[in-house]
Image (cartoon, rainbow, N blue to C red; front, side, top):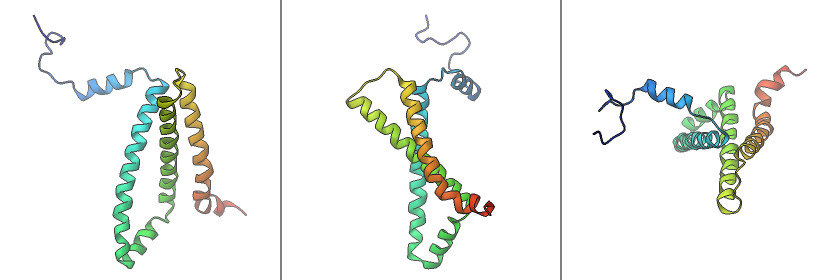
Length: 144
């Protein structure tokens, strides 16, 4: 008898990328799973941003290098990236508060409503803060 639950003809084979993608796409997507995935994704994005930010701050020792660094971050492309950073920070913070409140005080089985509330609050904060970031680059030039 086999000790593991592998299918016949599959002994010792590792799952392929195709199997992994199919399994990931066929998984039932619910609000709790979406919140979990977005929380991990935004956390990873924030860590990568922190590394890039610290590397950029190393240019403070050289005034010419710092001027190049600052000029690069004034471009419209980086303003869009700043809005995405704001959205990541907002979602990660509000979802972290939701998780903390649920773990410490209030346990709700209604994950869908809480996830959409966190998502809506994040979108509102991102829109309010993002408009001030992109206004001089994308909106003001089209005003009379």
